[in-house]
Length: 445
Image (cartoon, rainbow, N blue to C red; front, side, top):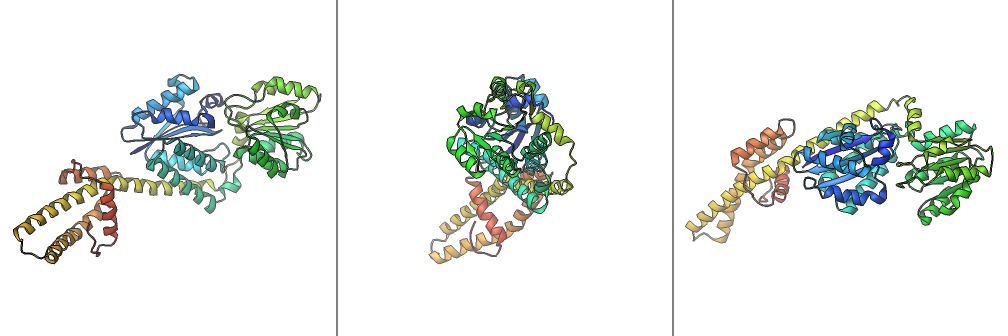
């Protein structure tokens, strides 16, 4: 199984394009189903955040058909020419795809380097794929390995504490804009991880009245309670804007929730009162025209990216890159050994079948043998075969790990003529592995 990733991120894709290609949570199941219906795709996960839109697919065949199918679907989803999508897409295969996801999970590829919200976003993407029935052992293993790399990076380095979240970076700008946020009134729209983080940071900054709005009134109530804030119904948001100094939006809505007309009407009630708007949504939650209104400062992800670009990279980045490289090497070794499993299992199964056939002929020629004698002769033959095969099995697994692995696998296939189906190779290999670890046991393979 080959892993293929297609990535469009803030590094090489304009914000307006990412906005069109974004896959809000409400649309994920449909997009996953369409991708999974592609004949060359066995498994698929979609990771859509404010920084990126990425597709990870597992295919039994070459990467080309997968790449084209995914690009076609993304282009259709975003109503963009497929050629434009392909030009902005970074395509990675195999170990390179794994290394990229590991870097993403560790926060190295985020707009805010080191931010740890990406961990929850990767888990959510994997969960959405599992719920949609589009993931399996290949991508589950990949995601698990990425999360292990992330855990190492965040426990063995200070990348998380030295990094800065997008919400915190935006609030730094708001703080500078007002000369402090203490006693300022704020409204947060969105109860996902980013919205809840923004609300918590606002409370820590000492804001006065803090209101929280969102789709689910249950989640709104929980988020508001956590920050000693006031829950808002969607219909109450326009009125709340008249009393707000800060508005932060972070939803997964497919269309803008805050219009220029709403803000204009709200600010008309408080002439001259400034409003700082931080839009963390992809697609945008706030109509860009809001930024042109008198007294309103609008900061979106594009502006935030320019602000973050001026920050010096943490010293811990080199250490995290080393962790990513180590974890990628471990993952590649595991994958290469996994590729050898069915071939080695087929070799063992073939030899076992030959031994069993010869034993049957021997016992037919010696009908006077007791049951105990038959069992002893069978055990002796299989014990000898197991000892003979132990070293070749271990060496085959070693040789197939590395760039020349496919050559060794092909040699094994040719030597033993392993093109035929020999049954459940994975079950056979599980027994082989146990015996390789315990070469002196008496269990048969």
